[in-house]
Image (tube, rainbow, N blue to C red):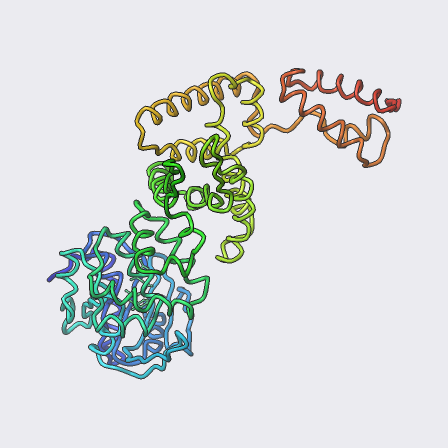
Length: 475
Ligand code: CTP
């Protein structure tokens, strides 16, 4: 096996190899960089492993080749990270590790090339290429990683239970790599994930969520979620999602299986956006269906208010999953809260005022909301899908027309609280809010036009109704 390095990669590897020879150690490029190269991919993250001190090699590389690059040394881990303008290079000494059962913190000892490669997660990540001048380019594949790459298989180099109990995060990494690369997980490896799933408990939430996000960022995340589910991992890391599973029947009437529906919505939205948070909105749009499910003999299954309860659940979930509690949370909540709105507008009630309200509430995220709604149309009944899509197109074109006419995108009502206070010479008080809300409502309802003149006239009328008189201003 010969790898075709780019000129800059070859130059860099040769420079590091020369430093390794100078220090008197054998060095190899390993892991994801080699894997991605064989898969014709590109990576900026490079892992260099050497038989000796990784830190010493890193310091030599910095001093000799990149005096201005940034070097961070992690003494406790025996690793060092060098940031050049083109690459992030991690240096580590070969090791053999054994892990305690209750922690990811390994007991590290120096090891041979084989010790090091065998303790890596998957055969496709255990490939190495020698970079010292005397053996530059020599390819090392001790665990048939190339054949697994060709056959698209995720497999552990050692007996899988050993690899996973060394580091249970690798169970999620297996699912992530299989999903991202469109690979299969070797049956024995998968069986070991099933058996060891409970050990995910020793992994920090941040690392778990990081892997989950990487699965969600793939082209077809449903594949990963199905593996997570089959292995038992999903129940442990995201039980609310598993609760969506199943279709219940009463009097011969059933509802759709919201687990598979949600996965389809997620895959659908992935065809139109790479935005992680819109993808999360797809995952969570129906999350409160199990909690709000009722059977009414007159109308069948209902999930009334699932968008309201769902928006509240998003908050709790983001906290538990250690997702950001900033505007990303608020965005996902807003999407979940509004996800029924566009499609609930039927031909008869697509009034300008309903459209204006939707534009106002969705604000700058109206396009994202429409993408989510479109992705949500998944019925098996073709006629239903056609009807929904037609209606959806109608809502979209009406939105465009109202938008062009009223310019409601990112709209702020033309009368502010400050203007009301200064006009009537009053301090902040309840009446200010009442007047402001009424003006906004009347504009949204189309009772007055969306112009400052009409809004100010209404402000004066409403002021009078509340017994307020404008203060005279000296000019
Ligand atoms: N590795 C491992 N077990 C882990 C994490 C990493 O054995 N839990 C090894 C693998 O050999 C991996 C290398 O360390 O290839 C580098 O790890 P990392 O940078 O996390 O992953 P990459 O394989 O480079 O892939 P990506 O950057 O896409 O995450």
